[in-house]
Image 1 (cartoon, helix red, strand yellow):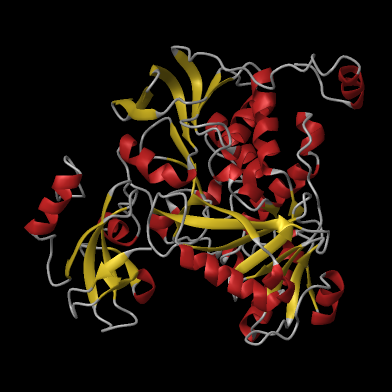
Image 2 (tube, rainbow over the protein chains, first blue to last red):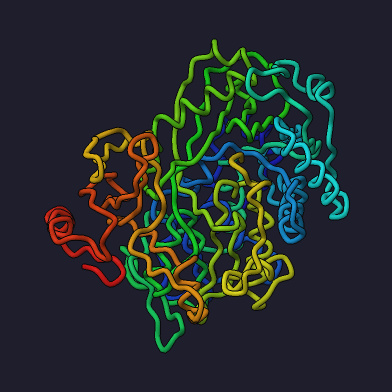
Length: 414
Length: 109
């Protein structure tokens, strides 16, 4: 793999850009791998990358039924933050955020990490108390956040309307080192790094069955033939329940559609991310100038990847209250992804009832921010059988009633 | 946008008039249940890619609960029926079989 650098750009500029090589290979599947990861989204590719980088396991295949990064990795609103309440969440999300800071250098691929800051608006007394508590918890966890006054909110976001008709802004939880990154680049960068380590990324390869022998996984059946493996990682977000069904167990997960939309591009007007959880809407401005807007999930299980129209209306109505200028914007496009929601709004990084099968799922409406940390922890779990980052997120917590309740931090907004 | 017919009051309306209440036909285990049974009741969801039996409430109408059979991929509503039953009625099952031969749902098929 040729390194990307300013010299490479200069070199290619002098020869009509004919020397760029393919970022990753597209090999035929082999008969057997040490590890198979199902799902070439951010989490799957990050898992493969850290398996190779941290544990030297490179006989790995990443199978993808569609195209690389075409699921939720390409459908989110690219927000990265770690201001969660519970200690296990803060640990994995902060690990993730700190890995994001240097990820471009680490994988030699510009993921455009922009620590522009995230404000979560407090618009009810209840939220004020909740976020003050979160700020205190974050201080103990070593996550830098602060509770700020409405005046400070207005300084950071001049376009905001502080005294909205229904919910005036009473303050905000501010994380200055949170921000955004280019979501596709995260998947592409990890894929390129995995391919360079000799791993096989196999696209258009749909898993149709999981083969087991005496309670242990032996391989998978795909539309491109049978592939054997020692260990299998299921990292398929919204389709986790479907894959778990193939492997013969159930998950405490429900899949629903979550939507996002972007406006026409406008001049820079907001240089941070603002989330308004009470009214169900959040917004940031992309480098292209589009306002990137996210809202709530559908009210019922579905696998449609589009979402119900009235949720767009709810989201936009909420944002017009908070940012009156949005009322004059045209919306360019809308899309949906299938998110896997657990009862306590925390992920599942766990062994399963089948030996050799591991599952990384349940990131729900907020998986993008967790990609590097999730990959880091899940790779350790798959290689060594346990990981300090993942231990609290086992499937057993639902038997033991040991929930990691993040319904406030997760709320609606990601 | 789903269009549902409430079997209690007979009104046909858009989904904004209703609220989904999770999986239908769960066995509600109580005191004396094993941990496995209680876990299945509370958490182990069916979450299928296909036929889904679920509870709905006619929130902005008669306020009563009922059941619906719906496809989670096509969003087709196969039918709605009274919640006063332990399993889906035969006419609903037939309607599903006509569209999706070979479907299954926990112990029903």
